[in-house]
Length: 328
Image (cartoon, rainbow, N blue to C red):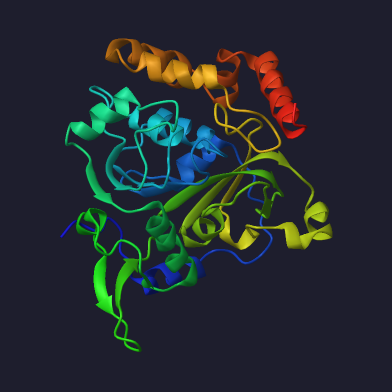
């Protein structure tokens, strides 16, 4: 039976959630401070977004810079975020990731497979268990509901089921065969959104995929946002808040924080830079130098953006996204 990397037991998780402050506490801090305080060696980490959409890039970079080790990871259609964290698995730099719940990793969608991620997974140094995208999302849903599992028809009769810790059960009401999908309570999650106030109320546009459930499943939650907005602005339209302050531990204002991924309505993905990552990974020595220049050798995400073309490049990506929305 493949291992479960996290306990689906709901009571310890509910006890952890009960310790979160219920008042309006100012949670604004830098990404450096947030990772230092909330991401620890050995933690199980999950990232929000989907594909290259709304990737919490700045947090992933900072996890590498702070040399966090032996993390578990939820690969729920993780493309560039998984690519970044896998970059910490190198000789002389330790092992950032050592266990992964796999739904979609290694591929950067239509752009191709990451050579370095493929080397890491094929090395056998990372434990992997398999899920479908739906069932991995359902694990967040179970955790968000505060229950240890949810039943589903999905996975039954597939090889994915046999490579997962899911179990077959019988419905007590109908006798149907079902899959018991265990809850996933990450130690810490990072989600990038369009807007947040200083207390952690968040809103974003575009597809949410599993981020609303993830925000309620994670024991600790780091939010990065394109911009901070006044609390009164959130109160004027409370129905637009998808992630409430009760779930959030840190709020970090990071303009262009999904770069080189895209941000719906804000900026297009930097396809040239994503292609550069894939190309430079083919040569481990060149890739190590690339990481020294772009991540380990810079102090923060703003400096990284300057290395990648700075404001002129970012304005170009913003204009391209606007033109696409206008149908041009």
